[in-house]
Length: 400
Image (cartoon, rainbow, N blue to C red):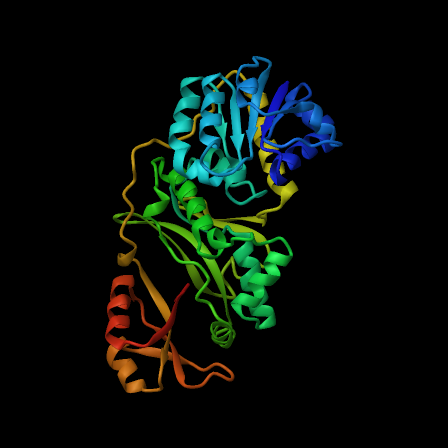
């Protein structure tokens, strides 16, 4: 069976490598070998064995009836969307690792694939090598999923782990992450939470079967987390993690991306370094955890190739995916209830208690001239009002 890869970067080259390393076992599972016929890229790769397969025009792939499966690993919405749409319209199966494309155009591309009796798959778009999309779409369909909460960005989890273990400041850890290749030159999408936001939008869309726009999800990154916050976290016996979370409430789904203080008994507490983990709670399943390498060339390529195998085994049929283009209106995050860890300037406990009510004070080693405390349970909106009433609030982190 002939396949093509669009984009010969880290993930695209990884897909070619996985198909080469595990070619014989994949052939057994599919019933025939899966061979790469074309690789689409703007560049040439002289000296690389792939050079003989390089093409520069996506129409070469779209117009070749021998190619049944196309892998998209280019990233970004355009031109990936134009190319993927053309492949589906030509009756080819497509798998992608591109979270930006899936979050924005997923419902449309799923509908087009159904119309053309092919498949649009995207296992690698969330959680790298961790299987989560297929379990949600097949194994867990008997459940009402009431919560999905995950550490879905390896860059920020590595940075939070380093800050916690070494007591280093944010800027220092960011430089280290960039030097090791864990963070991009422009790390905005990771450290501001935008990457995690797109991923929880995809997972929520799958769970509820409707389009969840990532722009509607309240998103905070880790740029406001300091070494002082880490000291308080240690004093509380907790760890700070950037969580992407979606929960079913009486009024619908509420979703957000933000740092949380996790207790040691929380299933995500010990997820460190570049690892990802996704916690799922179903109304009959109870709790389940998916854990593994959330990024990297071969783990992500492994998830892409798993889609290739699934499509090759179902080359003549569409596997249904519940994700309609009808927009789901999320519940306003300001109605969500949490306890909050708050740091304020000054040491006037009387004023703190007048504004915030009953609080539990936290002392951190070497921290002076401020107060740190945990509030009682209140809504996000109530907290915002109290922050405004107090004035000099240094930082707020939600307490799980």
